[in-house]
Amino acid sequence: MVWPVAWIAGLVLAAGCSRGPARVAAPALNPHAGRDALALYDANGEGKISGEELDKVPALRYALERLDTDGDGGVSAAEIDQRVQTWRESQLGLITVLFQVNLDGAPLEGARLRLDPEPFLGDKLKPAEGVTGPEGSAFVSLAKEDLPDPLLEGVAAGWYRIRITQETNGDPVVPERYKLQTTLGCEIALDADWIRDGVIVLELSSKDS
Image (tube, rainbow, N blue to C red; front, side, top):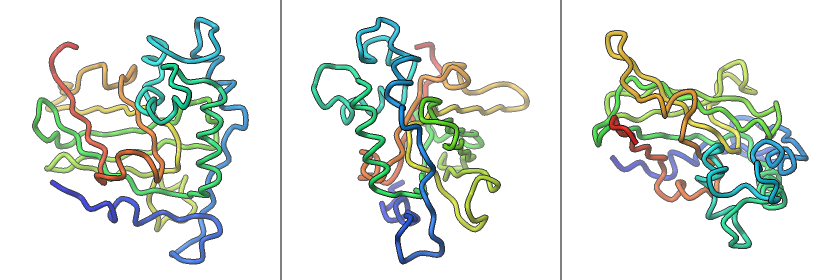
C-alpha cells in the first residue's frame, strides 16, 4: 500500500502558524539533552554514543546517518543538541505518523504500538499509541489527555522507542525483542527520512535474531 506524504505531513500544526484548526506549541525539551544522553549511554566515557552503546538507544541508531555530522560513527552531546535545536526552530507542534507493521512479511493486524520518548529529552514529551488494522497499518497519536485539543491527533518531534505487543487467544505473537526491551526506534520530524515515503515500515521476524 502506498500512502501519499500529504496524509502524513498534512496535520503539522506549528506555534505561530496562521492556518489550521488550532495553534499548537511544541513541547519544551530538555536544554541539556546531549549531556544527559551521554550520562545514560556513554558507558566507555569516550564523549560519544557509539558501537554497542547505540543498541541501548535504538532511536539514535535509527537516526545515526543524520546525527553523525562529523562522520566518526558515533553521536556526541553537541550533535544531539544540534538536532534538538533544529526541532525547536521548526516550531512543530504535532505530526501525524503512519506505521506499517509486517511480521514475517505479512501485515500484522491488532498489534499495539507504543512510542516512548527517550528520557533524556525531558518529561514534557509524551508517549503515543496506535493499533494496526487488517492491513497492518496504524496512525499513532498522543492520548487525548495529552493533546492540546481533543479533536487533534499526532506526535511531537523527538526520538522514540517503538514497543509492539500483540496476542492471539492469550498467546503472544510478537517476540520479546520488540516489547519492553525493544530493538526498535525512530525519529519523528518533518525532515526525517521516512517522510519521503509517507510511512514508517517495521519488518518484524518471529525467528530468533
